[in-house]
Image (cartoon, rainbow, N blue to C red):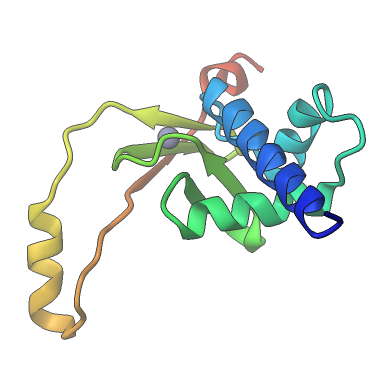
Length: 132
Ligand SMILES: [Zn+2]
Ligand SMILES: [Zn+2]
């Protein structure tokens, strides 16, 4: 009985974390997800949110965006799409550019890797930062 309860709660927490992440398109950091989830689960720990985000990204349910200095953001949309990152505030938005699967073909030839995917990130200055 004791062994079952925490497991069930863990699953429930993960479902809520995923739900909250899917609600936003802002590509939040783990801390930002934590703040969203805390409204529904006031007792949740940041470490729990972090571990669940890791689990979900390792299983391809969400996308992990690795930034500079290990600064990570999470995307509730697991399908391939491109991003643009503001060099000033770090904000990340989706880019509706057409996907380029042929890029993976051209990567295969020189490097000898088995190519599994690719990510493209544009950099720029977001509209808000341009106003300043
Ligand atoms: Zn900005
Ligand atoms: Zn995205």
